[in-house]
Image (cartoon, rainbow, N blue to C red; front, side, top):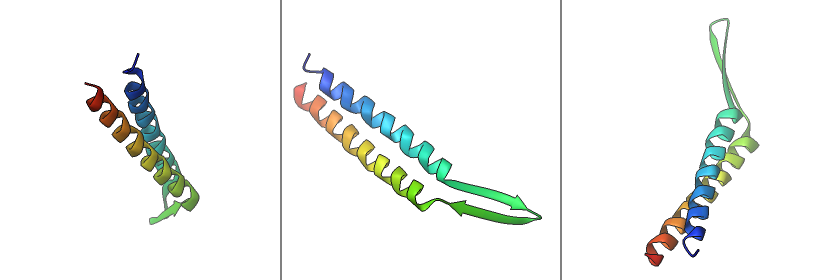
Length: 71
């Protein structure tokens, strides 16, 4: 029962990492129009993706640290 917490933290970290990647990809776009390459980015989407990335790293770090302490 005590090993449930590290597993939940690692899974939450993986979910947040997936959210960070997909949010970042959705917030940037490249378009080619008449031979001109245009790029657009959503700054708030990139900020959200960054925050998801930080939460993912924290969850993964805590999950691994908690798991190694219990073993």
